[in-house]
Amino acid sequence: IQQPDGHWPQNAWLDGSAYWPGIQMDECAFPLLLADALRRAGHLPRARLMTFLPMIERAAGYVVRNGPVTGEDRWEEDAGYSPFTLAVEIAALLAAADLLDACGKTDAATYLRETSDVWNDQAERWTYVTGTAICSQVGVEGYYVRIAPPDSAEAGSPKDGYVPIKNRPPGDTDRPPEEIVSPDALALVRFGLRAADDPRMTDTVKVIDAQLRCDLPQGPLWYRYNGDGYGEHEDGAPFDGTGQGRPWPLLAGERAHYELAAGRREKAASLLAALEGSAGPGGLLPEQVWDGADLPERELLHGRPSGSAMPLVWAHSEHIKLLRSLRDGAVFDMPPQGVKRYIEDKTVSSFRTWRFNNKIRTMPEGKTLRVELLDPATVHWST
Image (spheres, rainbow, N blue to C red):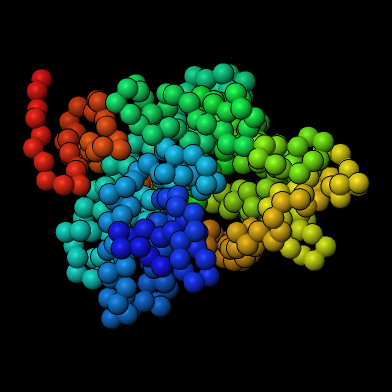
């Protein structure tokens, strides 16, 4: 169901036809990580890999042309610079570079790595804030935001402007990016771009826990982001376009993977118990659990599945991966390329790129400007 331009539909009917028209760049990049994982596991020898080369080239081309911004984040809500999406895109381009190298496409592989380096270098410029009110409240220097708005020629920084919060009442939707945090930032560790003990990550984890942690009988779970309106109303009335976000068991699994990356296996195992303890009577994992007092008349019990989707297959997938990761003693699906390139070798880019979806206005001294356009053009330069 890959489209001719290289992307995959946001979702599709069983016959493969596209349903919603949104573009989530993480979904466009994940198949590249899957292909590389299969190659590294010995399931795609070169002859077999060559049969998938057209798919890989189209997918990598789409990501490199349309990233680093995303039309929608992984929650199918906002456009902009998302730490989660950035992590997947960068890791996927590095993986695609290895795949292309294996197929003899060395020039294209070099370009993908150079693009990954440029984006990785700027992840903090796009999504990391310091000196905010939350910093003072929690006692940290800075943290990664949930998402920063798409860059524009008028904004002084992509972190300026406002993030529209979905599922909120009219007139109560826009928030400054620095006010909204999410466990999404843990993806920078999950996909091998930042070390678990990087001070920016440990500070972000403190903010996540201060803003989003919910302690329940089965253990801690986390909200998607502060101000989330997707969930039942405060009185337990069903979500009707507005509401109040509830804790997601999925996020306990993701946090467990972060703890495992940090070398805290026992803590990861305890979060596995919290994830499993959130299941319904039939063992199915829900999208969200009820965090309020018992409302038996609405079949809402504290710490038990809410009226959200169940099963959430995404949560079951995370559960399976966590079981494998705990068995291995390491994060099962962490791509190795970013770990080697950015954490161990500390590779930095010699470039900065200007493109229509990332109109940089300044660049560090000593960097080479690369203007990237989708069609041949004449650049008029003035000083």
